[in-house]
Image (cartoon, rainbow, N blue to C red; front, top):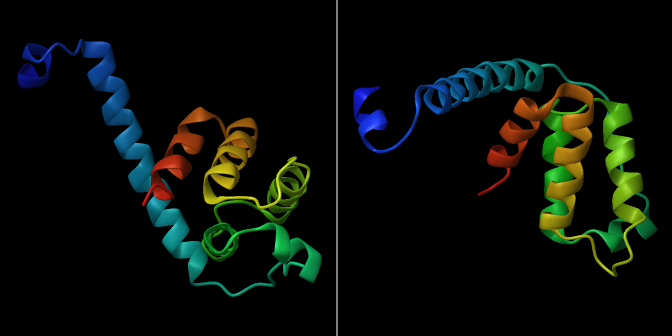
Length: 120
């Protein structure tokens, strides 16, 4: 902690970072546990598929598979994405919408985790 303080971070910033790391680890464990349980999945209609690029379609699948969002949140994400005034919904578009939906439902800490999870 002393090293971080010498680099200019204050105690509050260090504590917030440690809390974020702890919550990310907890959420990752929950995601792995949810992935073990099969359930039904939302399929995109042909018209919907055409609006999402390949990477954003993959992200939608991961959101469902890992249980990062519940079915209602997923539907909200899809609806908001399709409402965009763009020809294609990109990964970046979907990431911004998803973090907004998650932040609204679960708070900014979980939204930050989602953001980092999909920044690859």
